[in-house]
Length: 319
Image (cartoon, helix red, strand yellow):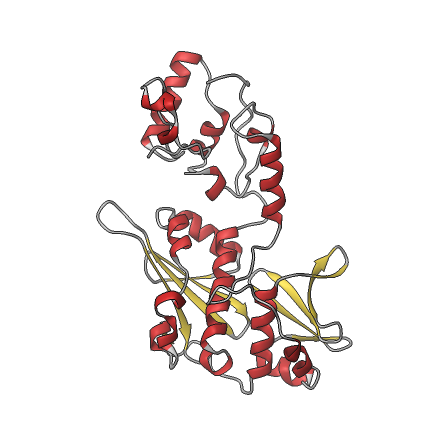
């Protein structure tokens, strides 16, 4: 592969076309090992970015490493400018844009918060396993973090220090409100696990409304260990299915099942998202699509903190 672990595409570089320089390849590739050996032999040193990726079995830093942008990029003389590094760090702290099935940007109708004003908090908590809080607030566990629903202030909040701060997460807000407005019974868990096509509105999940799993396949199709680590970070429960499978809980009583079959030289990777059939009692098809999209986004984003320790910085210099 001609794209280096740092993200530089050698296919569009004249040095590669002339044979002056070869590609480093992904950090977990044979090309990377050969490049590191050549650098050590010729220069007596290696590129710290490539060495770090090789040690940690990272294919591409920008896509696969939760430590990016690290000091290897910040303190090294290349490959990116400080402005680019700062932009990457800033935008990775932001929540990704929320799009609906037909690609409009998600907004939360005011009517949904109006409907919540009439709901009894204790009853909702009994039906959902959310926790009641003071002054018409509910607390629930979304994957690995606590989310506060403030009915009075009409917003979701996340922990900030010792308190709570309003958060802009429109897709999660919309799906949460739809769930709380529609839930009317306690449905059994662990029964009748089905795929999207098996739901009553299964026709919805075709064509442009198919579940967006392609980014997950691109990220984890050949990195099953990375998938396992990220799913575990999101409080996923491992299952003895596929090559790797986890039960993830965006809501305590609404689990999603992610099954991954790793790709190899013969077969392309595959991923399936399954549900308990009771999900269609509380969420319409477009809301199910949104919930899967939000959870898949969390799987792509991964941990908020580095998952590995990079080796010490090597000596700066051209390699």
